[in-house]
Length: 260
Image (cartoon, rainbow, N blue to C red; front, side):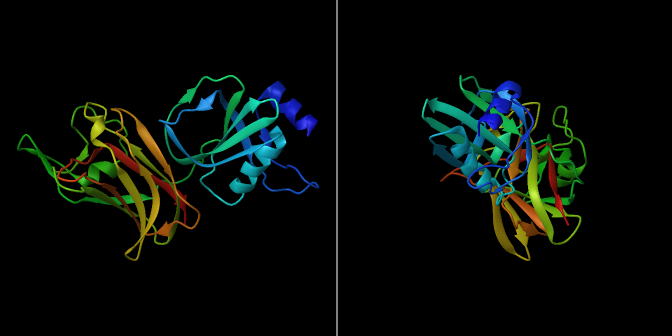
């Protein structure tokens, strides 16, 4: 294990998990150093954690998990004390950007973003907000390709109601959805995006992709990573209103990535 640790310490960069016990290969994937520091709990939701007496022992547990879960796009490693190491796997959801807290002894490594075709085709809102009695902020704005929405222009925006939702029909049936990206509005009111459930719909059956508690911040965009086998024809994105409250659903753009 010493050569692997030396490579990480010297380069902190590109490496592959080909690790441990009896030369067994649990996982092979390339990760690059994203930041020195620890995952910020406000900006990620990790999906797995493990500890070990050595770096190799802890990272082996996380790499084994990653071999079976497509949501693994990054791994944090931290030395807690001389004989204790921890790894955490990212993530169910994350805010875009370098949202890592400084902490000695920690590194966050991440896969490069997958390229691919945006599968979002058409969209529908549960209700439509009529802006100043004139302009309808229709669902189609969520899939028009514009990720910057100056003012209220180009927003998909519901009326105020309980549990407002946006549904996205995919270009192809039975798509294996890997990630859903929500671009929040940039002019104001980013906090309106909260308690957001993202589900994959397959012939009327809901399969959960992720839940973001929020509230989001104006101008942020959030990536939801879906579990293996998240196959469907459409995406449902819904705010879960608290008891006795109503909410607006407003978003600039939604992108859906996966394979057919």
